[in-house]
Image (cartoon, rainbow, N blue to C red; front, side):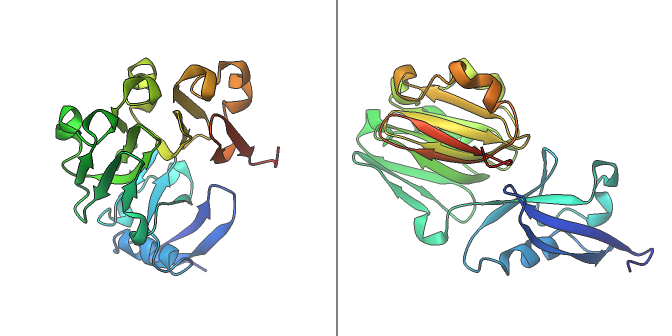
Length: 225
């Protein structure tokens, strides 16, 4: 049983699987939670979220709002081996400090100068399709660049991508993002997965996994649908 100086947490994947649970001293920082999560999948990277709030390894446990509950969501990111993402026309690499470096065909994402000020630090995931890239930052916002029609321009959904994004999946022509509340945002070529308005009510909550094909997406919800 937790003492007064301890706080009980459960570390839970978006699928609902419990990665770790227990009581940690309130004097510790959240790095102890990261260490516990990473024991489940050595070599992987993750983000920890309390609701839509990003928990960094330096966050004091005592600073967490227990009014939001003691469930901490674990969002798995790419493995270190996948930190250089290759498309048919360009490359993007995440450095240890969260900086992104790109090269290759300029109009297909090799030139990220238009978004450079957003890519200097804090990037935790980069996803690409054939002609564009999308990056998630530590604060849950999304930065896009590359061929505009294939998702390099996300201005139409910018307000939805300003915070709370935990995972991005691309197909060849579009992107789909899962937010911390289980909703999905899509953009890119409308007829090939970029427009999900026809199923928007079904994507408003509860999505835990996305999969993309050449020109479409599929989503799994927490209830298995």
